[in-house]
Image 1 (spheres, rainbow, N blue to C red):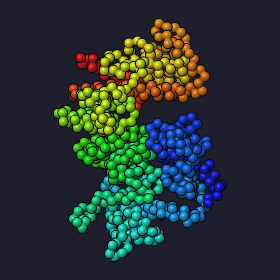
Image 2 (image 1 turned 180 degrees about the horizontal axis):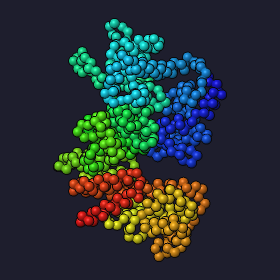
Image 3 (image 1 turned 120 degrees about the vertical axis):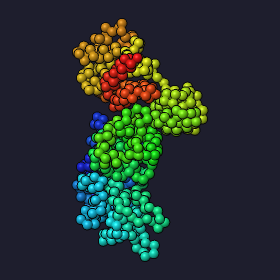
Image 4 (image 1 turned 180 degrees about the vertical axis):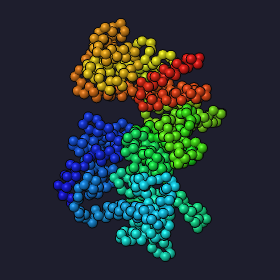
Length: 639
């Protein structure tokens, strides 16, 4: 057993926020940190890390424990393995542990697999660095523009063309070759006996998981090997088979190297191949990852969702890339994560923009000097639903049969959306894009979900009676959203002003500044502006009888938030709720206007609308108002 004092030392020195932050995107929430639980597929953060107590707890699935528990549960390690991993990370020496035979057998093979992969990584890296044996590997990396820093970052190596290099190396290290065969590193010689190397004359890319263990390899051919016995060409990549430590549908190539970039940018960029990942990291795109020889899985998306707020699809521009994009898009929608599609370089983000065009792949773009184009494509990535919308609309313009197929595709996609409000918004968007009755789209979704016919009224979105109209952009082109026919202000906005009236010091906070751009009632905006100039909100309310309904005035004067324990947190929550409401309203109107611009072939208008859509996505409502005012002015002049 590990001595209690060593366990206590690890627990006290291990930074639980840093350890969990390798796997979960955490945000500060008072004295704790919050994020999406890595143990179940939740959509609203309920996973809490309390550093003061070195403890985590999920209010959704009830998982809880300390830093040891987290490593054991997430990585499937024993307590001793978790302690060894943490001890190594935080510089604490663990005394040799004597395990009983049963425990040793249970964990021995897994430990041996990780150790053999570590040795194999060492071998391949040493060969790559060798002046003679690694010359071909280094030449290939130089040709692809991969420098020493990225080579080290990805622990790249080279498998020499001889048949027994790795086998002989593992023998000198007294490694179990039977386990090496299970890992796909070597294979048995059926006639001569013994083993031979599976990776020969290949650039070897280790698959590293958070925590630093190598669980698999992906090896790319770099020379011109002879054809197989049946005359077929050898595969471009040879990947490790699944094992006790590796499940390809649960891992992503480059995740270990991209975590920091994802957390900095808030985005994960998905590409198709390993070398796309490597060369894009070389070009400064440090948030890029790729699936491992399989279509994107729900497990992989959930993993990315915990680390980044959005996923950008940057697949190749050929037919296979388009198919992969559509599959990945549906998988991301099912996981309820924001998904974007990189638009064609040089094209506006209007309808018809798709994955990289002309068969171009990201790696080739960078090699051809197109890094800035690619950076713009990622920065201006189109909303996934918007992309899908224009794709199916483009296919369905011709005839009824094409529209039928498009509706079937829409049904499959929308049927994966669990949130009823979001589902209804998307249904409405597709109905406008396809120029068809919303009931037809709703029924297509119902059929795809196995629910049979559903009438147009079922599942219709419910709007608060005081909520603003969603036609602010389209129906009042020369009037900003806030200048509407007077009536009762939205109750959510009244509540926010009530909070500010009871706690005027909050007016000086950035959160209150953000809230201003979310107010749609011009009277409340005027009151807010006057308060920022030094006039009391309560004093203004007492003189506003003629401008505001009596119930609104009573609410503002109620003092209901005077005793609030955490008014700052309340303001933050109210601002988030208003932001969500405004984004939904503006997105619907922008989607409608973009469809109209697409049909008119108005590229300039589509470009401006795309900028407004990006501002909505980022929550920059001041910029949205400016852009929409400019768009309304241009449309008025054109008329």
